[in-house]
Length: 128
Image (cartoon, rainbow, N blue to C red; front, side, top):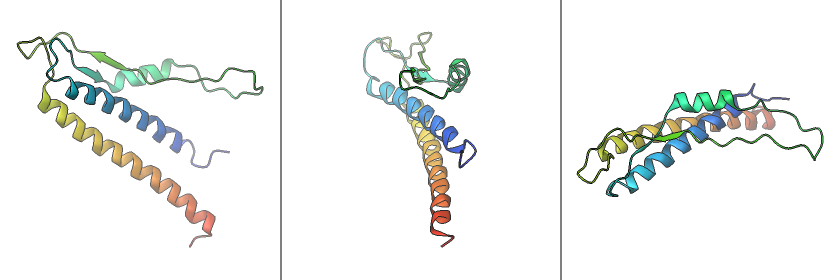
């Protein structure tokens, strides 16, 4: 039985994407002064291609069956550009902007999940 028609699952996947993007941005900011470091980026198209190419979810009918797990590893290094004299291409202003946008996106997802669980809680309490 699927209580929310797959909504919670989609929101969970979206949170995974936002977490991967946040991780890449954090790495870029922390390595802004590292000589030769190339900025990482998580692109939605890459995440979508990864999700579409992963195997379908299967029900395990026996404890000996292997589970289907997938990790969101969709970051790539942008090595075509170099902004600084030391070969580093991290633009701190761009990274801070991306971090703020990603935080707003993440908070929106969390609010939506809280709303879904709030609805479930209301139903369990009998509408009160």
